[in-house]
Length: 231
Image (cartoon, rainbow, N blue to C red; front, side):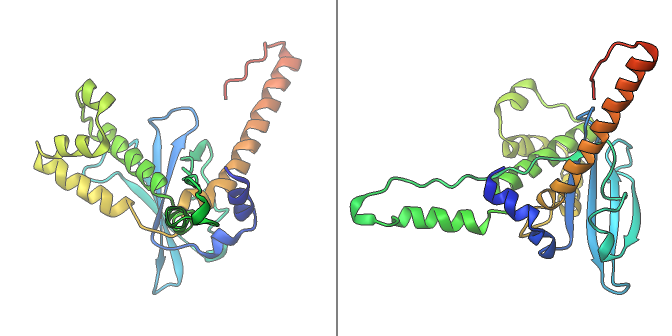
């Protein structure tokens, strides 16, 4: 994370630009196949926020089962229905700014540089790179959830788009299910939800690790167990 991005997160400004609906993708810290999606939406009539936790470990075609809860806006950033133990957000994918090649007659900034700068600033908090990363994450979760096995060569060398065309072209049901997944779990927002919640999850993870290490140290001192840090 760049210093500028970290400063922006610590300022708390991203929380003020929270957009709904949005989705948060989570991986278990020990099992990468254990995934959860949290969707957050504003309920206009009640004035509260509807939180749905979709469990991708339990099969229920065409969508995973979910639990839901309504929250006040003041609880959005620390409630246990969103900040889940033993899980972490997928890492935000930044897009670095390419300065380009400066020329004397283009100072202080060339037309190419101005274009690159504008695109980077516009998408700085939800970069195209991160959007693609989320799409790939959801696609791989979809394949695993429905037990769809692609040829090794396609998994190894093809792009997400090629895999999608190859898979959905063979089965109308798979195509419909994938369209439904994208509709339910993919939202366009100014700031990536993972970026907003990354700080909260980092603090939670450090607390969990500290607790685990203290427990291991207690076992070692009390019972003479060898210390083994496998968190």
